[in-house]
Image (cartoon, rainbow, N blue to C red):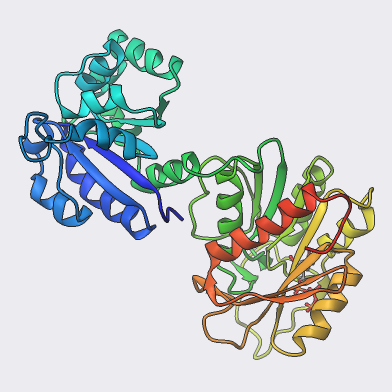
Length: 406
Ligand code: CTP
């Protein structure tokens, strides 16, 4: 979340300038205030009025504006920002930044600010690969400017290659990371997510409706706090969050293999996956034909991955183990039994029969049980907010002496 954060968005004159409108909306939706600064070139592609309406603030374009500049507005604007984002950043503005030129509102603010700066280049592939642009970007990196590599693909100039403005979700995620305290720096966190698919012929499987959203939110928030994150995911339709090590698996056995290989080096393991408890005993080599009027598929039990981790937990402190319990009845009893059986530090339980909780929705209402016998109800919130709460508690356990109650 970006509540209380002030973002200065510098828009320069490339065809991707129209995407600035959506960026302003995204930052605003996350709670940030956005001050837009446009170059003369940018105004050829999108009007200041559009960005003014979307940001709810006057757009800065003219350093010699008598009204806005009566109190040296550009210095105030430069000081007020927690983060400056230049998106899209043309080869021209990158060159000016690297040379320290301040000949318009944006380049002046860029020299005057002490806030971190994120540059998102967008240009023709030949311009991007030109040795001067490469050198200029390296100069910016050397002085601590963050550069988000452009995407690769078909460009507006009808050439293929690197130069497309990075995808907006990636820009938003990078901005969130730059505005988040690196409280998990140096920590390694494994998160599992999604369902598993247990096949019984080459085209059919047994699964569950887990969307993976809770686990992906945990991975994204942990990465934002600068943890080294490993996300082991069953099949989902979600894109891998930026900056995480992504391990794609299909079955519970594959998930077990991936997790057991990684777990011993982790500071915390959070099992948000809805692991299939059973798998078909036989997997037919060819598609099963519907010849019989009935069909029986015999199932055998899958290993309980979290229980195995709980048994193997080598010290009283690490890795911290967090489980989930999705229940349709007897929440307290089932969750506390799982907590003890799997030797967890805490378990996050939710009631699947409650509207807006559990599988396939963006929200969740959970109850947390700790090994010390504490029980805490969290209010109804987004899965990303639940992820923040869970990781706050993981961090607390990492810093507390021993495992005290939070
Ligand atoms: N889990 C696991 N391996 C399994 C099944 C579950 O690691 N084979 C993990 C889940 O990721 C979750 C926790 O154990 O963090 C509890 O999962 P849940 O399905 O609620 O419980 P089960 O132990 O499978 O018990 P039951 O199905 O009887 O409720």
